[in-house]
Length: 123
Image 1 (tube, one colour):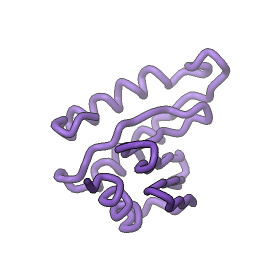
Image 2: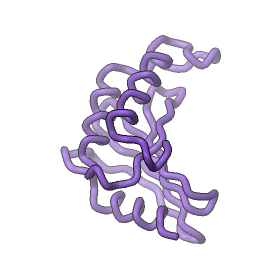
Image 3: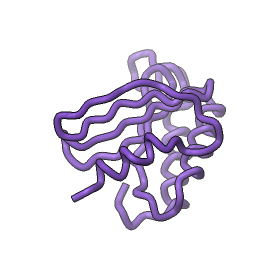
Image 4: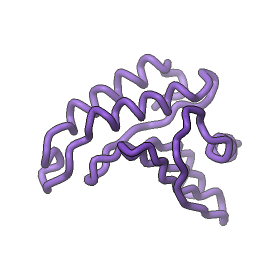
């Protein structure tokens, strides 16, 4: 997403992605559909970010999860997959530092992920 996009525009793009990927086999290879529960959780996660934070791009995964990504270069990227069960799976690369794991979404955007977004977007 472009840095100038508003959260409303990002949410609209997320709804469009959901519409495109909410049927079984949406990718032509048997992908699981993105569920309404996953969409709802993705919106809650997005809304938990402050408006001045960089907006992510979104994608859908063949397992039915939605992905939020903050990308600056191949060596500065954070990817967060949102499961319908309320789990955030993440992978981050910042230079030589790599980390991955998962954590529950408890209504607030996790501080660890917030800090990685800052690091990914530093000049």
